Image (cartoon, rainbow, N blue to C red):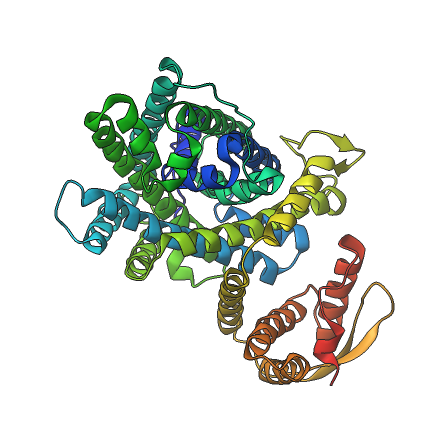
Length: 517
């Protein structure tokens, strides 16, 4: 199998990261954030930056340890010694890349209609095709295109900052005004975290970066800090021109800010820049999604043909085509509001796993050379990843039930795909799973029996079809995890998994009710 070429240095990778983060989110979510937090929305952006830095530091340490494509898959697999966990995290990352590309391309199509009378979906599909061609041509060309897009996107936000701080506000502004109190600030923080998503994909081009063990950690932190400063200044500048009520009521808040400051020319200019912002996000997610598929195929967790590299362009061309086709499919059904929540939910799960992986690897692989270490440690124990893990768990509890169900469904589909790819045969054996208290002898039945029995159990307990659906995904996941633990026999695999969870996490991931039959 051919190798990827290393074209990217610190500048291009940092701009790649800035482009990943400075996408469509800030252009559409700042109004919603103002509705929740009022003038205090800058605090919400600051909180989002802190959580992003927690995760970014964890990514920096892990990417220096394992500078490979399919970064999340590689990190989790090495930390938990379990192919299934790694596969699911890689699966979530790939799916979110596809969904983000599709939905943001719809945003591009919407902005495009202001200049060209063209159906939104057609504009979205056109963008995906053009940028997939750029993705196929090569990472160097993609990096240059993204650098240009990122600079234009940043220029639009810098324009807002300049206008906001060069024009004196009509009345005195209380920058700590919070109409909904702390609750509103927290709700805005959870919402605008979507605007910080993207830096994690920087690690997925590790095999195309020069001196990745030094370059990637620096670029990750630089990109988060740069975008955090821009976001906070944009939020402060915006409320100096428009009050938070008008921002909250606007469907194009930054365009309205520019219109209020310099008239129609300002809104047209910001709309044009928004086209570049959405195009930048789509390009980067297409690039990252293809590299995730490539990395997982290279690790033999997906069909090997997805890892083929084109002889001339040195890009994973089949993975590029796969992302192209699936993104176009999602573009015909995408809803940017719903998908934003689904994406954030999936990313929060991934960030929790990554923060936990740093902690686990400090104890399971203490002798590995770490070119970059997360700062603030007590002995071997890293404090910041613990805070990062706690905040992501808290964020996961804030989502609507429907979003969580869709997220579980995506995980369930990934579990089924994993089982199909592994071509496991039905079997039956008795073993023991270790939990924090005492071992419980349980029968390990074929997956079909696991699904039907646990579904029946939960349905009888809660008398709800949704409960039955909720039971199926954990059944598939638990069966797969047990069958994929380290060891040669089912006994060794399940016992190793239970012991690992017992020692490293301290809680059982398997509900004993699921095996009560």
